[in-house]
Length: 89
Length: 452
Image (cartoon, rainbow over all chains, first blue to last red; front, side, top):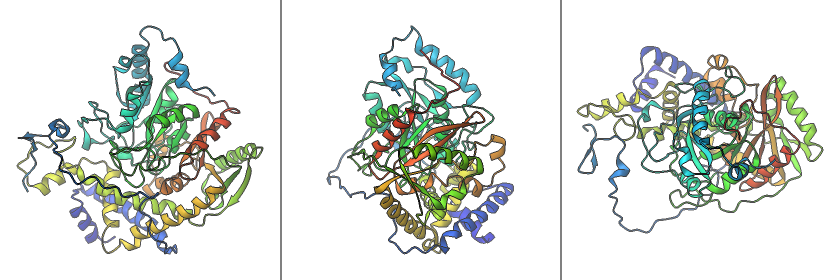
């Protein structure tokens, strides 16, 4: 994997690594990707299976339901009028 | 072999039984790190069998971290469906949350703050990622564990600690309240000291749940098979000792079953396909941990979102970071067809070919390709070497097939486990198989904490 591609991944995955960590992980990733390349030599044209079993689609009734159990939202987060306070966008 | 659950519920307990149990458990836990949380109130439900949950299953009011610093301080305000059902049955009491590899990312249990140690010898690995669940089951006489498998996280540690590890058909047990690793692969299962206990817990927790629409498999069968298949292409992956012992097991089983060797023709690439799919799913699942909604709370909310998010995500462990980056890479538009879609095509082939074979008989294999390694030995393994050890447990997980691990031999004092795979929704047949095996085999345990 080229350095530029590795930098792109770090940026979109929002990960910042120390120099040592980056060197180690980059080396591992190169090795893992080479390992994954084995599947490219395997002939497979079946329809992809994204689930192991057939999961029938069930729809909920199209009804508005109020969700006002603030307790469900609490997880040590800062709340303001029932909303979680987050960083600036 | 009689059920420990039934025996326990019938037995008279001495006064202060649960308090003494908690005290002994704390003492043992300081050496083995099986539990992240021990619940002092286990005795408050009256006469009930202790059960533990892997730390990625939400328990109301109990810190549930999935073994990650990212979820430090996360106290779920609700119970996972499996927990709710066990508690509602009135037969089970929560005893604590068990140790695990961070978010389930590991085969040996070492991707944890304090790795769980093998119940037979603490210098050896517990196996992972449900490391603590297996050690707890091997340590406590009256206890069952809820564990979770994505690619082998029940089978591997169960085998290495000499307990029964049952992974049900995908979609039979609700995942509501499970902290996701890879949604199309995650399954909640059971570890127990015998097959009867695994059956009782499975019955108590399975069945449709409006909160998890993938929980769609209702009718579970018990179709006995006369044939056992050994998969030829996997044979070379086991080391010499495992192969020799497994061959001895086949000799014993041949008295009751016809044993045939077959080729699936796709299992050589199963581990690669599995990790591609699992990492792609994991990298999206981990995006929800942002430093202000669950668990870890960063103080400075004045920071801009991107920097805030990046700073929070520095708290993931190294294997999690590796999987996030690989998963992000695999999902990139330029390589998606090459890796992700191709892996899903291979998965389709495996489901089809294994499914056809499993109509005729069960598949039998070792659960783990090597003898239990020491903790110091696995620290030297590369990620690829570690992933490759999932060779026997990945195929049933990729296909959502039920599978069960049971101890069949003790080598140099350490247990060795074998695995039986069945067709979708034939889960009871596997439990029956192990029940039959137990009639001819004596399980050994080094610890029996909580004996009566």
